[in-house]
Length: 253
Image (tube, rainbow, N blue to C red; front, side):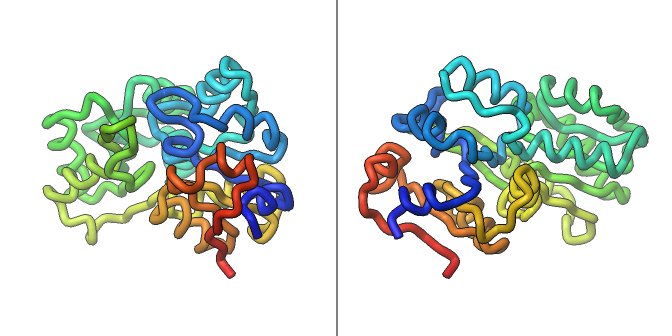
């Protein structure tokens, strides 16, 4: 079945952000038309851990492609929301941007390095030796670990942007993480996919996932039984998908 027909038939369309809808802070060719055509059944599922769903929604409104915040699932926001449910007001150590630390505070999370029972790891553009020291030693002393996503980079035109996974790699060089209680929230973990399906209360077989990363988007979705469409950026993009080009899709059957 052609990708366009898969999207038309699906009750819900999960779509990745970086590399699929957006690149270098701008909507990619075909993204606006895609969102305007299928926006009522789109749920954005992204490993982004520096912004909130409201900020994504504001960006999309400005680009005439409105998707409500309730239909945007982000790894960083989900990590902090799950941490708030799990730890409440107990002290935690938050490695994140100032923006996400403000969001964490709004959820009631308490950043207290000296007494933290958990380390919450998001992408932190101000990551430092001190933060590496503090996080690693908290984990060595028995703190649990919640990781927003395992991606080591994400694309930016011809360059790459260091991601949460690169910070995790630095921490893992200092402490044996096999002895640490870990929770991975972002793709390929099922958490974000499940949260997306819950938005419309549908089963995996009724949805399709569109992504550009075979390891996180495609394999992660297959684990839950979702049909997937892999955008390789060349033969298949959102732009060519809308033109109903007859390129093969990846399916779980």
